[in-house]
Image 1: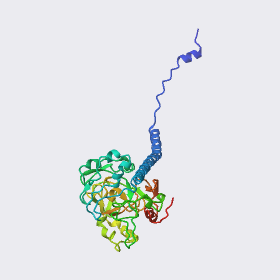
Image 2: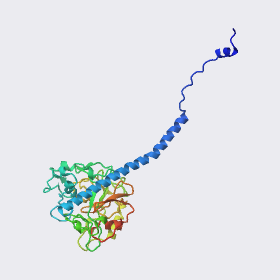
Image 3: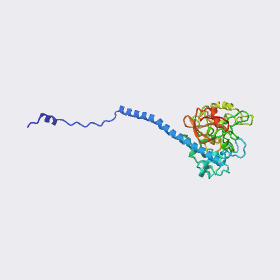
Image 4: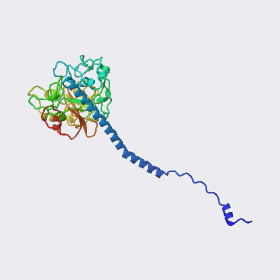
Length: 374
């Protein structure tokens, strides 16, 4: 029997070879890479923003807890903690040795274990303002970093060296007032004399003295911690915003700022002094022997390390000035657009950089009669 045509045709058909696996062409691969890059570009700012929001929230909580320790101290002792108990009471850059108010607050800030190792009847530091040396009994303890005193957005190391010793840093300052002056003997720029803030040298300010209202009075703010060594930059802004403070000794003399009655300047004159800051070139860093950087040590009582005032608005382009017992300060942070401040009732608010300077100075005064804003 002859095979049918269909059978014959089928018998000569060859099986198809398997198709090769399909891969990306170069063009397709480049398109995929471009899409991934776009997605990363869209997502990365959102991730970074979320991380900064978390850091700012943590900073706010740190400052709130710090405020609670201030209020607990005032409730237990009847007054807010003083700063720099030198004993002599003589203004000037000599006889340093007092404890910072941050050290005094340790038992009220869940740091009793650390505080129990201190003897507050002994000097914390020896030497003059220009070259402070920690008491060797406490030097190792001063190097302890305290997480509650560090803003997580600040990239400066938690422990830094100054004058050959290591110190745990501090971002949360207490205000010694408005730093304003009237030209007729009233000048709140020098914390070795009574000011219109809650702290000054050997102060014992009670909460009842805050007649402007506790919800309208700033008692503290965050600051940016200094880095590096004392240095000289070309006139103008430093390369790292706020991480260096101006060496005021090279620009003006403190005696013109806080002299006896009749020799004090006006606030307008102080503003005029600040207007020349871009012409200065000498800067203080973290490792200054004088410890005039910002937030280098929570144990040191100097204004650079533990104090602030209201003269400069938040995140002002004008850097902090430090000189002897005087200085121009303001809230500064690595948060975009402003900085956190602490009010006398314990609440924390984020003040924008656009805050009016006169209003801000008034908020740092405890009894000036100013009316703030909510």
